Image (cartoon, rainbow, N blue to C red; front, side, top):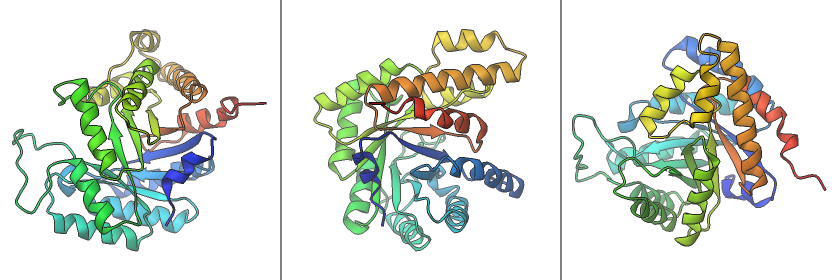
Length: 295
């Protein structure tokens, strides 16, 4: 199996794309139209999300199976959440993932049930992402494993220090690298990277970047994940409140500049949250030659 961490050993910026499993056949067909453009950027890998409690388990596996059949040269990673699943259900998913050629797991706790914020896992379940990492590492050692990091601190964490301690538990359990939640101020990533280093976390930390092409949509996303839009970006986008193409242009420019600075300041790559679209991310990736150090 492909060892994903080795992608970050080359010293060159690594590009990867995150997808989600469409709910309809039309959405799936549209995704594959965009995948053609995304694949042309030669990403190191694709990832596909997985609903809490296994709500999109079959769709996630189905999408990844079709991507593998269509683009066998591109390694694949699946998200996996432990909330709401028994250990046997997690094992079954991991076995299926192996069978269809998935080589890496993004190990996550998952969102707690809204009706049960004090969630207690079943006797045969797991509560925390580090427990899921331990399960994968011990029983499915061929998988690469990544975990989530939060430059602006996880919204449920009692403190930034506690959040970093939790991240270290995930890394110590066997994670190969960290992929961050979206952020829009690179200073948040640099502070987060420094805090991780101070805590003894030495695995690669991959910044997650979301090109903002629609302000209303992005506000919904950041409200769900606890990230914050910068006032500078919001002001620029609001100039084009009724102009979709204007907002699109601002968002692509901002994300490209954001990625450029991250790479120049030592980020090992960029993980793009593409929202199953290709246009903005492809335009940014075509500019990545600008980010590659030139002797």
